[in-house]
Length: 444
Image 1 (cartoon, one colour):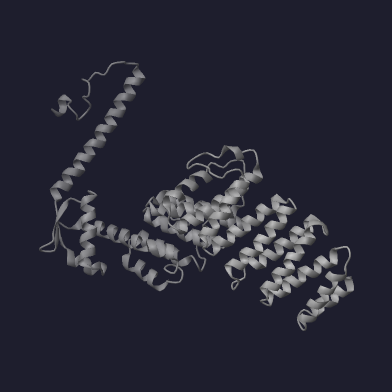
Image 2 (cartoon, helix red, strand yellow):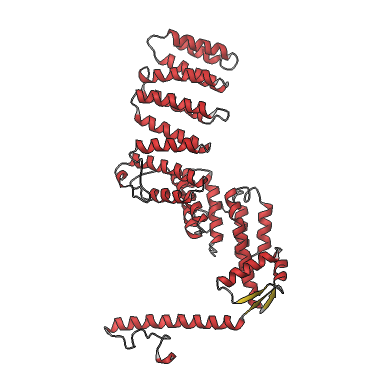
């Protein structure tokens, strides 16, 4: 049997039909079922599959599963099953329904063998395939099965998952399931459900998840915060995602680092995101250097250089749909800072002049100026008829003077409270509610 098996392997490339026939002969003649029939079926399945004979491959695989129950050790069986499903899962031209059949025959065999542990792993493998293929209906069905398997079928939103704290393997599995759900809700832009699942992941304790799983969770969390324009929390989650992907050796560390830089610019931080020891080694990475240069232009408030960098580096910036979705926010923020800095030298400025400087439309300039007025960052009014912004300089000076008095008043109150506490006085020497600047005799 052994010689016949290896002789058949020699025919795989030049005469596959001969190899398949010889392996079939081993299966039919070996009695009782044993190692060589098992190996022959495994090779037949692989050869048929890679030749595109999917139905023949499924037939020999179904026979192989019968051997897994008694003819070979559990370890050998599990290794063979995982090996087959690995190449089945990455087949690009395999029909979705046929792929489903491969997993169904596997799970039926594992249920008969009462191998629940492997069955759960197979479900998890299938869920990842449906996630990659964006088969969300199928994915939800598998996720429900996995939740049942770990006794968490209907964990309520925002509910802490305390029952898994003492079981590392269950907690790790739960995080893998939640990571799949987070990816699904991120792709579908279902932010309410995304928030619920994200909050649940942060309550799973006493577990040691693979860093890539935590990278996925943190990356999706960062995207959720970005959709809420919560740039600070987004930056934190993207940094955590980057560190986890980096630890796992995952290429996704590059995209998460780009997202970190994006959030960093939007939160108007003056700190270089590449100053940390974790990110510094990637500052000159060919895939990152465009974002590095963009940050430098942003911090210099060099609008035209930033636009040039974006235009000349489409592959590393705009070809990422997530970055492309927010790059206009970056440019708007940069233009806003430029306009705000420029207005320091003017009492009155033409909208068309600013538009020419920034190479954008008059309407875009008007919109930015209006937001600056509404946000009380400048005091003035837009004369849309004549196309000018008139700044109320006296009001600006008065406002700054008033704010300075308010800060001085606040500091005096803090000092007074500190002195009262230190001296042990129990009464306020001033009338109730009369603090400095508010009803005190010095201010009328």
